[in-house]
Length: 207
Image (cartoon, rainbow, N blue to C red; front, side, top):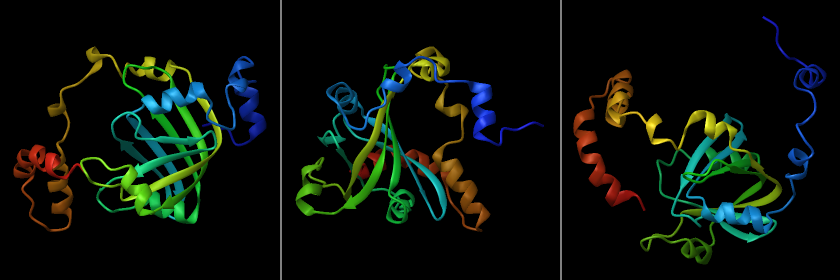
């Protein structure tokens, strides 16, 4: 099977970027156009890379949860989670990160690359509080490049098209997956009880 193993081969197959606008749209700061997308986004994917490899982590809150501090900096609050800390560990050893912002019913996405640091200033964390629960920490990203991605990927996937939605019951539940992995370690776990209790558990622990 033939594979691409050089930049020259890659460029020979894909040729030059399509149109000058695909180059122009990349800038080194958050302008007012990009800011509007970021502040309307309730969901992002954070990509990091460290000693244990690459990690992609979802982050979400009400629109506006990502703060555009200046054209050069954005801040993302970190909420209570499972404390695996995959992304945080990666940032400690390698500050290079990538972020992609999604907005429901919008085809375009915004992509940011930059260098991150983890801040724990109490006043800053409290400024991101929801339901009187401050952020556990705040990821501050120095922006290196920003650009918008056209809507082809989301259009192909029909991500926002209700006709493409599947029933949640067609896939394994969280309880079923937890029961499976518990069994691999010789631990008994009642997945059905977990699933039944989870909606209330979510209400109590989401923040």
